[in-house]
Length: 299
Length: 135
Image 1 (cartoon, rainbow over the protein chains, first blue to last red):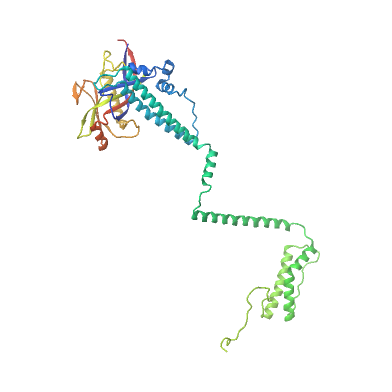
Image 2: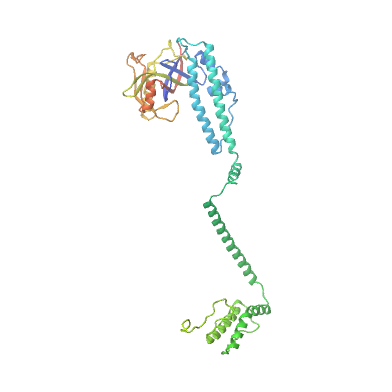
C-alpha cells in the first residue's frame, strides 16, 4: 500500500548551516504512529507501540530515562519562567538533534559511499547521548535556579539577611535619622494626647471644695506674696476681691478662672499705679529696666 | 493521519547581486519512486503546498529565521513557483512540477555566509496528511 502525503502546509522556514549531507532535497516526517520507513529511522524509533502512541517526545523521554511525564503545576513567576526557559532549550535543541540525526542517518564517507548501518547507528547513538547530556544539564540548571529561590518566606528572610551588615551610606543614614526624629515627634504628640485625655478624665472626678481651695491657695501663694510686697512698698487703692456666689455653690472651671482673673487684675492695677518695677527681683528672670540720664556716659 | 515533516533543501543556486538563494522544496514523486520514508506526493500536492505557502506569505507568516531560533526574521521569499519543465538550477536537475523557492536575505553578514556555503540549506517545516492508497 502506497503512502501519499497531501494537504501539505508550510509553517516554518529556517536558514540552516547544511543540507542533508549533500542531498538536494531530503524530507523527514514523523507522525503519531511513528511510521518512519527509513531503516535507520525505524531503528531509532524502535521503542514499542505504547511509546509510539504518544509520539516521538514520549519515546525521547524513555530514551533519556525520564520516566512518565510528571504533572507540573506552575504557580509562581519563577516557576513559569524556569519552565519557559527549559521549554525553549528543549525546542531549540530538538531541532538541532533533528538536524544531526538526519546527518547521521544519511552520512557518507570520503568516497561518497553511504556509511554502514553500524556506523550510522553509532553516530545516532552518540548524538542521542550528547542530547541527553545537554538536556539533563539544562534541567539541572533550571532546577537549581528554582530551588535557590525557596519559598516566599525564605526569599523574604534571605532579602533581610542580605541587608544585614551592609554599610549604610551617608544620605541614607540622614534619611533614617530624619525618619526616626519624625517618628519620635509623632510619638510625643500621641503621648500628649493620651496624657490630656487622662487629665480630662481626671477632671470628671468629683473634687472636694476644700481641697480645691487649698490647692488654689498653694498655687497662688507666689502671686499673693508679690502683691503684698508691692502693697507694702506703695499703698494703692485696695481692690477688694469679692467672691461671687455662695460658699455652697459648686466649684467649676468658671469659678477658678474668675478668681485667677481678678487676682491678675489686682496685680495689674498695682503695677500700673507704681510703674517702677514690673516684677520682683528673681521672679521674672527678665532684664531689670534702669533709667539712665541722658548725660550718662558723658560726664 | 496528520504528519509533521521537515524538508532539508540544499541551496542550489545563489544570485549574488540580488542576494536571493534558490532551492527546491519539494519535487513530485510517484508511488513507484517514494521518498526515503515511503511517501509520495503528486504534482498537485506539491503545487498545493506551494500555494499554501503563498497564502502564508500574504499573512506575513513566510519569514525565514536563522537556525531554527524561532524569533529572527532574516529573510523572506521573493520567488516561489512551480517548475513548468525540467531544468537545471545550479548543479541540480529540477524536475517539472517541483516547487522552487527563492529567499531574499538582505543582511550582508548573513548573505556572506550563504555565499560561502556556511549557511547552505533551507529547513522547512510543515504538516500534511498521509493517506494510504492501493498500489
